[in-house]
Length: 255
Ligand SMILES: [Zn+2]
Image (cartoon, rainbow, N blue to C red; front, side, top):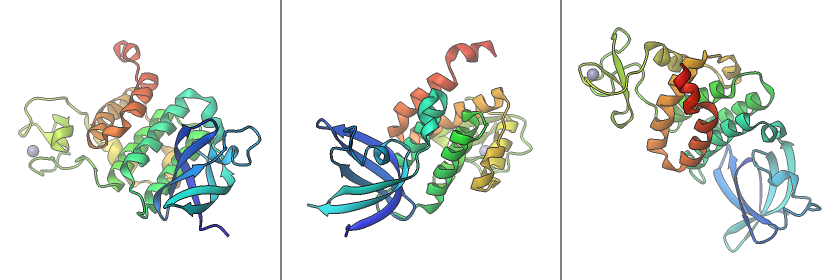
């Protein structure tokens, strides 16, 4: 009998020794759980498939000296196509990096787990632009973990922003700010704020409906990524990979 049986998604792998790996599993009930998988990188290992990044599986764990060790695992969903498309991979890696940084160990995280599972499903099997799903994930994730930016009311004075012609988005102030409170700084369009508000209203199984025009997608991502990195600096590497693929400087200059 295993000490713990759980269902979770592999959101980080750290290889050590010749064939071993430490997994960070993200579970709906218990947040993040770290477990060692011995010999899992051998081609003949029964753990080979269930210890791959993004895999959702059922794992049987033993506890040894206060550390979990994977005894058995069964793949429930591999999300395998993510590994064959670099743009989708980068979007999925950004989502899992956010969960790694923003979700605590031993803390129920059912809503964030559902968001991640649905986002990876649409990234794998849907026809959305990966950047649309990443933008939608970002705003919904930030809301769920308590870092929701101000998008309807000024982050400084609290007044309704929907009638203001000039708005700015200042991560250090907490989001969108009216012109009176912030006479300088990077602007944000009303359409971008409205798109963010609408993305928050969807159910998780509806996020495949998000279809943004390229300039709007880039505007939202270019505001939300630095904002998220400010609160969760650990996502910096995943954010840089995502940016290099989805918002390369050369493409931005052409617009
Ligand atoms: Zn204000």
